Structure formats: C-alpha cells, structure tokens
Image 1 (cartoon, rainbow, N blue to C red):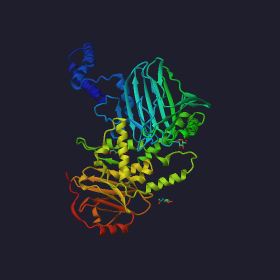
Image 2 (cartoon, helix red, strand yellow):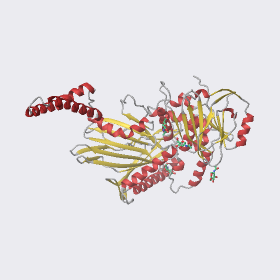
Image 3 (cartoon, helix red, strand yellow):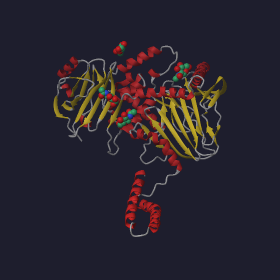
Length: 584
Ligand SMILES: *[C@@H]1O[C@H](CO)[C@@H](O)[C@H](O)[C@H]1NC(C)=O
Ligand SMILES: *[C@@H]1O[C@H](CO)[C@@H](O)[C@H](O)[C@H]1NC(C)=O
Ligand SMILES: *[C@@H]1O[C@H](CO)[C@@H](O)[C@H](O)[C@H]1NC(C)=O
Ligand SMILES: CC(=O)N[C@H]1CO[C@H](CO)[C@@H](O)[C@@H]1O
C-alpha cells in the first residue's frame, strides 16, 4: 500500500511539472495562478481514484473482528510458517490451516484447549481417562456480545497454547499450560482488553466439576494472595473419584482439585485491561479400594492444598520484591525452559509439495502431542520427596543406555503413526500407538526416562537409527533418501551429541554428514558395510557417501571403539552394488 501510494504521488507530481511548463509564458500570471490551482485541485481530487482504479485491485474490506484477530496472531505468523507453532481458527478453519487439536499436557494432566474440555489423566499409555472436571476459565458466552472470532496458537517450543477471542467491544487473550516442573499445576493467564470508551461488564465461566462422590469445601487463606489485580482470599477444595475401569469396580482413583475463589463478574474500565492469573492444582491417587479411600482422600487433599498455598505465596506480590509480574514470568519461564531442553534433540525434513506427503508440520505436531503426554521426571520439582537423587540417577542411566533402540523400519514410512489429530480421541489413540511402537521396538529404557527419552527414541526411529552392540547404526534404505534430513543432537552415551544430516545433491545422490555437537572422547564413523576406513569425527561435518550393499547393511556406523569398527569391516561380508543411486 505504502509503495503504491508513493508511486501515485510521484506520477502526479510529474504530470503537474509538465502542465506547469506548458502553461508558462502563454497566460498572464493571475490566470496562470488560477489555472495552476485548478490543476492542483483536479490532480488531488480526480487522479487518485483514477489511479486506484487503474493500478490497484479493489481494496479489501476487512471487518474489525478479523483485524482484531490478525493483530493477535501476528506475533506467531513466522513460527507457524516454520512449523514451530500451529495457528488454527475455531471452525471453520482458514483454507491453509492445519487441523491439529490444540492440546496441552505434561504427562500428569492434559486437556484439549476449548471452553468445555474435560481434564484427562494418565491411563495406560496415554492421558486418556477423562475426569468430570472442566477446568477452562473463559468469558461466558450466554450473556452479552457473542464471540465473533476465535483462534488458538499451539507453541510447540514453549508447550503453551494461546487462545484469542474477539468480541464487540473487547478482546480476550488466554494462555494455558500444564506446568512441566510442577505437574499438578494447570496455569491459566487471561487478559481482557476493552477497546471502547464505555464501561463493560464481563461474566466469567469458572471451572466446573461434576465428579462422582465429590465434596466441596471452602478454605480461607491465612494470608490473602495478591496475583496481579486480583486478591485471592479463599480456596475451593473439591475431592471426588473416578472409576478407572469398568471391569474392576472395586477400585477408584481419588482426585483432589484446589482452585482459588474468583468472582464470576468483573467490570472493565473504559479502554481498560484486566489480567487474571489463575492457577489450579490437581492431584490424583493410584486406584485404591474402598477401605483405603478415607486415608487417601485426606492425604491427597492435604498435599494439594499445600501445593496451592506454596504456589500462591511464590507468585504473590508480597513474596517477590519486584511484584507478581516478575514472579509469574519466572514461573512461566521454568516451564518453557524444560520444553526448550526437550527440543534440543529433534528432526528437520525438507518440505515436499507432493500430495499427501509427510512434512515437518505433521511431524512436529505429532512429536508435541506425544511429548505432552509424557512426564519429564528429571526436571520435576519434587520438593523434599524421598529418593529424588536416586530417581534422577536412574533417569540419567536410562538415557545413556539406549541399546536396542530403535529396532525396526524407519517410522516416517508407517502410515499408522501419522494419522489425523482432529479430535481428542484420535490424538490419544495416536499417542498410544507411538508409545506402544517405541516400547516394543527396543526403546523401553528410553521411555522409562520420560519425555527426554521419548524424543530421543522418536528421533532415532525417524531415521531407523539403532544402538547395537557398541555402535550406532543407521538402517534407512538408500531408496528412501530423496529428501534432506537433519537429526539434531542424538544422545550417544554419557556426554556426546551427534548431528547427522542427509543431503540430496544436485545429481540426486544423497550424502551423509556427521558432526559431533559435543563429545567426551573420540568417535569414529564409516559408511555402508564399513567398506572404507573409519573416519575420526569432529565438530566439523564429515561427509560420507551413501552406499548400497549386497546383502543390505546399515548405511552409517558410529562408534567410540575404533577396533570394533575395524572388526565390523572384517565381519560384514558385503560388496557394494551401486553408490547412492536414486530409486523411485
Ligand atoms: C518443525 O519442523 C521443521 C521442519 O522439519 C524443523 O526445522 C523444526 O526444527 C521443527 N520444530 C521443532 C520444534 O522440532
Ligand atoms: C557420566 O559421566 C559422569 C562424569 O563425567 C560420571 O560420573 C558418570 O558415572 C557417567 N555415567 C555413565 C552412565 O557412564
Ligand atoms: C548440531 O545441530 C544443531 C541444531 O541444528 C546446531 O545448532 C549445532 O550447531 C550443530 N552442531 C554441529 C557441530 O554441527
Ligand atoms: C504430581 C504430583 O504432585 N503428585 C503428588 C500427588 O500426591 C501424592 C501424595 O498423596 C504425591 O506422592 C504425588 O507426588
């Protein structure tokens, strides 16, 4: 727009100069002045519409709600474009949007991000046991203006979902996350902004529970907690049960929920903004018998109340000298840091335009869904829990011991593992099949380590990498190497990260680049069948050709044991067939 109007002005000025030259010397100065003014009028009033008609397409009329939404979504456009986030308008979706369910979770609690969604807890391999508790705090729909536009943004890198609503008169930004270091905390941050010069009344829809056998009681806080503009004076404690399986009705899971008491009505000042910081604590037990019920309820309630009071203290204005904003930012950052850490390992694939081809968008969304349903034990803040150091050590060990993982064909080829995630049921089913696949294909040790292990295992599986008997090998068939792949930071042993990059060159031949991102000792690599001498790996990329051998072998071996590698060379009896040929 800017450019076009500048051009218009430039051309107008040009015409004016010519007219001026023409007029000079033929008429008297008064008339000239008059004529000039006339010309100026004509130019300024007549020409722009003509130019617009000639050079611009009809100006797009955007309704104010679309503009409001565009403004909210602008900060995420680039991430969305790079597949690190997914923007999705509430149905109907825009034409180029990807229909992945907006979801948050940390392996302890999880939910779809929408007003009526129920909370889910872990059951079997996924978070697929819904409890009758709808935790989402929203602006109520029944009264006042309807929501004109709504969209969600899932930020994979931070494990947060943003939800935006534009209404007549005001807009609402929600941010939700299931905290990574405190898995029983579901955090909701709301910001309601009045865009008009009138006072606006807003009704809130508070979290609702219909848990069977539930009791609700109020608990006054000994010290009111001031979070942003709101002071919480009391807590609501809800405790109830869930039946994990129909087959065994004798056992129940006890669920305890603690929420700060919040007034469901608020008033927005003229052009004012209200910010609500609303944490929820949810803790649940293992399945227990009726006899254990009473004790379980008591201890769970105690525990959740304690977690909430500690959290409110930590976040409240009084506790931190620099105010709530600072402490809530710090608390959010602790969560984000864990997600950033998890994504240190990962995968990039060049995009293919071919129809139905698997691209980074779906891969990232799937990885995010799986990670959201697995806990990250080593980052969890277990307080003074007994055995914590032992647990951490256990995880560290599981992470370094990946022997046997991943022991099958590369998963990029497995259609079952890339199904749709449009509904919660589909998402949960998909996560279950991923967990089952990884577990059964030799990655059970890594799974035990939690989310860090799971992302390792998934990344190994994309490239059919396998840890086997003192080395790491890549078992992809050369015929699948017709796109660029980058495997970042595969964990090898205690302190080593390997990057493997597969690049398809102009002649359609693929080459493998290997670099050590971090290492504590020397590592060597060799190509297909170890036909060539092992090469010492460094921080700089080393290039290896892709060799097809007869019979088929791995296309890459990496080990710290040079002798082992030389022995592989003598133990594998293969011959090279053809070098990195393109297969269709
Ligand atoms: C998402 O996919 C792109 C393309 O494959 C990749 O470059 C990017 O690293 C992925 N994001 C994450 C968080 O792994
Ligand atoms: C990893 O390295 C640390 C120190 O470098 C060492 O204490 C630990 O035992 C090692 N763990 C394993 C599993 O090798
Ligand atoms: C390994 O990959 C990561 C992520 O792509 C990159 O930041 C890093 O520089 C790479 N390291 C080496 C040694 O190439
Ligand atoms: C995630 C979480 O905080 N779980 C706790 C729930 O309460 C029990 C005690 O009743 C703790 O052992 C869990 O750590």
